[in-house]
Image 1 (cartoon, rainbow, N blue to C red):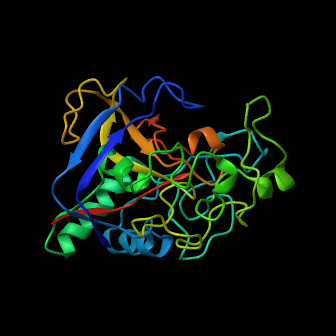
Image 2 (cartoon, one colour; image 1 turned 90 degrees about the horizontal axis):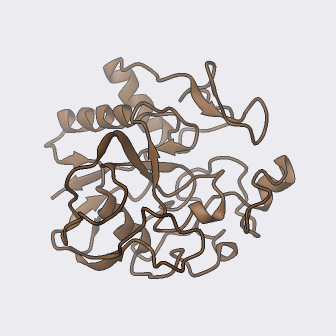
Image 3 (cartoon, rainbow, N blue to C red; image 1 turned 90 degrees about the vertical axis):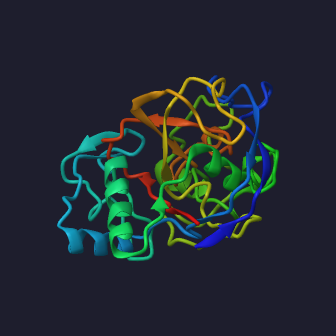
Length: 270
């Protein structure tokens, strides 16, 4: 883990940003006044497997995947954390885990240590992902400049599976990150804060409930209310098209959803 610096940033996207969702505004200036720690990498398969073996926590099944037909995602009873539908080693990020699984993993960490481990808040996540940037992507304005930093939907997937998002203005990042599915954590370049895979590889559960806008967000990043039948996933994944790899992109999922493109990053209160 590393200690995130304190600072100020603007959450959300400007109205003219390509691919912008209606829930990405109004933009708000957020002040991060207390340092906190964050995982330099996403939680790996090896780490999550240690939790499963120590606790007997069940492996969530019926994971969302396109293993049966590329480009057609469906729940599959044979797909789970241990078999996400593609090869992984212990250093790949854990996938096919629910929000509840993520919370159980963190509870196990806290029971073994002095406590303080938690998920990131949504505001903390975007602050870390932007790492001082104000452009659509942490590396700049164009998705095709990002393959040194993110593992997303790119030429590698198009060559193997075809263009799965035909009809989109920009359906894939016109570059090659070198990976068809997940990459071992830390395989690509870190962002300006020294954190790896904030964008791409696997999406990351955050603590926040779903909200239709930032209208109720406070200047410290806290949010009141929200629909807790949905939780927010941030960052996009190995199969995510460019518009959903932007720093401001918000995705709503049921906390019980199992998906081969969603994993965990851990934070810690100091």
